[in-house]
Amino acid sequence: MNIYISNTSGKALYEQIYEQIKNMILEGTLKAGESLPTIRQLAKDLRISVITTSRAYSDLERDGYIYSVVGKGSFVAQRNQEFVREINYKEMEQCLANAVEIANRCGLSEEEFVDLVKLIYRG
Image (cartoon, rainbow, N blue to C red):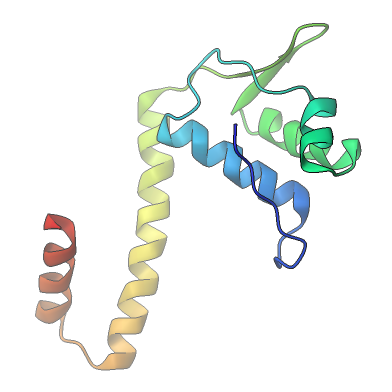
C-alpha cells in the first residue's frame, strides 16, 4: 500500500492517511476483507508517530471503512455498492459545484459549460 504524506500540506498527517486509504477503498484498490498494515508498521514505514496512524485508523473505523479484530489487525470493511456510489456522487457534486462557480466567473454560458463537460466526459 503506497501512502504519501507531506509535512508542508495544509492537512494533518492523520487526515492525509485517512483520505488516501478511504480513496483506495472507494476506488476498489483495497478490497473488502483485505488486511491493512498494522498501526505500528504503517507508522514505521511513514516515519511518523504511532498515535498519528492510530488516529487515522480510528477515524476510518468510526466511518465504517475498516474494522479491527483484536490480535489479528485491521481489515477493509464490506461496502454496500449503493453506499460507495452515494459517496462518489457527493464528491462529484461538490466538484461540479466548484466548476460551475469557476464557469460563472469566466462568463461561460450553461450551454458552453455542458459542452465542456461532455467533451471531458468523452475523453
